[in-house]
Length: 51
Picture (tube, rainbow, N blue to C red):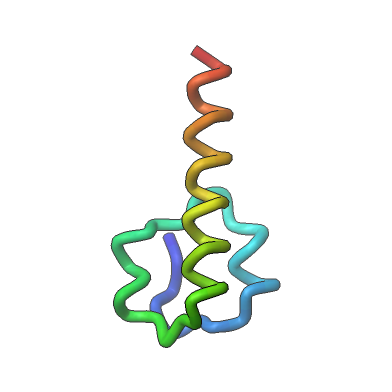
């Protein structure tokens, strides 16, 4: 789970899962939001590959 107060992307990058719904609480730039969404797509793809 992402700490909504955590804004350091380097820390967040290594979490197992990024909850996009929590992003509203993060003062994120457009690029950061795109990054999180890309990470979620990658994780979803990996989950599908494991099935």
